[in-house]
Length: 208
Image (cartoon, rainbow, N blue to C red; front, side, top):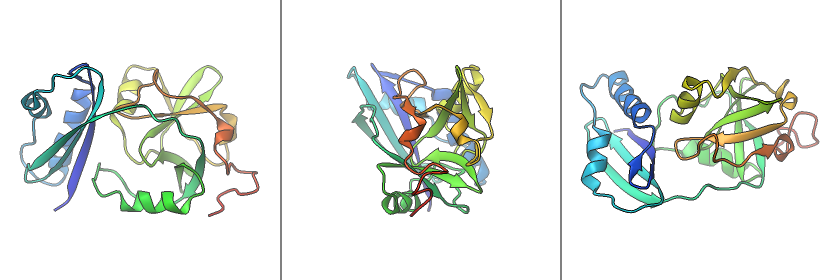
């Protein structure tokens, strides 16, 4: 049976973006024709987590409502290099635990992290959604692989906008950052666009 995963930010004993995580779990059960769901808040309370600091609550579950949890201390990673990787068939509409295809793409690349290009459009990294800066505004690709909880949160708060970001227009943006449940808009490292080593026009463009 398929296993699914939620990675939830817990800081100073408080869960973040619970409403978005719970909706995603509920939608997963519903999509696969299963009644009911699992209660994330109840699961967290039963853990009796009493440590301050930043943690990732890693919850894996299946459609029979069996789950397991891990509470992992978390630090925001700084990444040294990114590479565009083309994959026109990859689908990650639901947050499956199985990441073999993502890991395979990463192993083929020549950089620390990948940015997946699908049908000429920028999507996500292997573990996050993306934001791109143009002027003073930040935009997120409309062609995401997974509509992440932080992405939904920032769009709802109108801190970011959606845009069609492609191989043709990516160089119109000056900087980019990675966002996910653990990494907020204000927390993340901001990278200049040239941190992507194989941008269109570079010698090793999409060279795998």
